[in-house]
Each structure stands twice: as structure tokens, then as C-alpha cells.
Image (cartoon, rainbow, N blue to C red; front, top):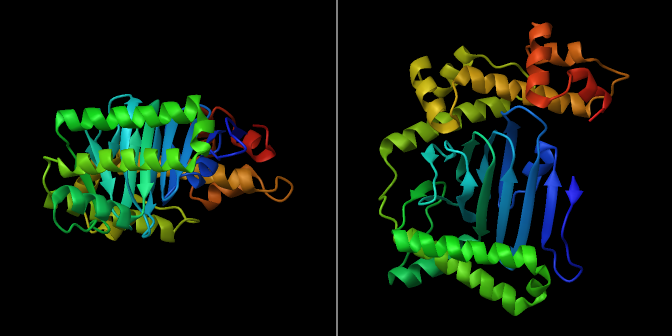
Length: 323
């Protein structure tokens, strides 16, 4: 982890991470886990801008990644991409310059990107969004808890939102000292809140389809099963049983949410899990074989090749801390 720009007066930070767990811990308003799915050395930069009750973050990734987690019940927020390769998705929704995703309090979050991408998140208390949406709609509005929703605003509205986000990020990058002023922070917060609320209010996408909700529940059941078996190998049959879905249905749903088959997902997850164990382990007390076999890897030669192709180093190098 490398610390970037920071002012003594106000904690606007730009931090570079080479460890997925450190990057995941830096995400505001949600508890997430990141898995590297592309080959090479992981690298991500987080620009973090606290704005009183809200928090703006810009997260730039160089590799393909999978992210899953849950939004705090004391928070809600939005995600959009600034730039990226095709195939960026959030909760099964393909994202481009014209759309964004809303996450309600306690919502499950799943994201996949196939290459270099810059994400922007805006997290805030549900009461703040409730106030803004109720004012814009002229009627009582309550943030839907536990729900994610694709937002498809009118063209002029999404254009205004992206311009507002760009202005805030430019200010944080070029003149972070200006944000030492409480008045400036409050102004930036209100501009962003208004722009995101207007985008949600002008959404032409309607409600979430039943199919989308049922697919999200299948993914949630799979992830819950995986959470309960963190230190154990997991196999496709077990995942089908846990999800209550056929292999074919599971394959289609995983392609929708993660851009890969369940088997590929399990392999990526297992490689990342082994890497975490190797990084934490004491090389004087264990070895690569023991750790790999404890997590269901038996073909050690193939595993070593797949590991090196994914992370750019051998499992032994990771265990010895030669990173």
C-alpha cells in the first residue's frame, strides 16, 4: 500500500494498493471481498473524498476483478463507471456511460470487470437520499432496503451527473486543500446529492424484473454457502444444492453476474483463497502443498502453473514473502 496525496487540514487521500484485501477494506459504506480474476500483479488506486455525511470514492483497477459484499444497513449509494473495457457489470447489469446502479441499505453487491476500469461510488445515509428524493418528487419516498436497481436516467440528466462527479474529482485531485473548508465540502455534497437524486428520479427503467430478483437470490444463496465454507473446498454439485438451481441455470446466472461459469468462478475464488492463506502463513510451520491440499487442490503441478499465470509469481514465492 502506498499513500498518495493528502493534506494535513483535510483527509483527501489517494492510496495505491497491491493487495486485494487491503483494497476491499478501503471501500466505504459496504463490507466487500475482491478476487483477482485477471493475470498479473494486482494494482488499484483509491481516491477517497469524505464530505461530511457522504463519501465519494474513485477506484481505478488495472486487472480483471470480481467483487462481492453487502452494503451497510446505515448506508445506501450509487456506482457508475468513468471508463473501462466492455463487459463491466454490477448485480448482473451491464454498465456503460448512460447507466448506474443504486444499492439500498443492506443490499447484496456483486460486480465484475474484465480489465482496466475506474469505478465511482457515492455512499450516504438513507435519510439524506430520502429527503432529497421526497423533495424532488413532491411526495414521501423511502429508500428501498435490501435492493439494488439499475438506473437509466434521461440523457441530459446523466450528462449533468457525470459532469458534477468529474468536477468533484478534479477538485479533490488538483486542489484538495480547498476541501479543508466545511462550506466547500457541504456544497460539493449537496451538488452530488442533487445530481444522483435527479438521476434516480428520472429513471426510465422501471422496477426490477422478477427474473432479475430471482437470479440475485440464487447468487446470494451461493455466496452465503461459500461464506459458511471459507476453509473448505466447494464443488459444483454442492453449489447447485445450496442454490436450489440446476447446473444449466446456475451457469447462465453466473455468466450474467460474473461473466464466467460456476466452475471458473470456483477456480478463481480458490486461487485467491490459497493466496490469502499463503500470505498469512509462517513458512517455517507449513508449506505450499499442505495449504493447497487443505483447500481441495490435488493436482499440484497444474495448480502451480495456474497460480503463476494468475498472480505472476510462484506459490512458494508468495509463502516466503518475496513480493
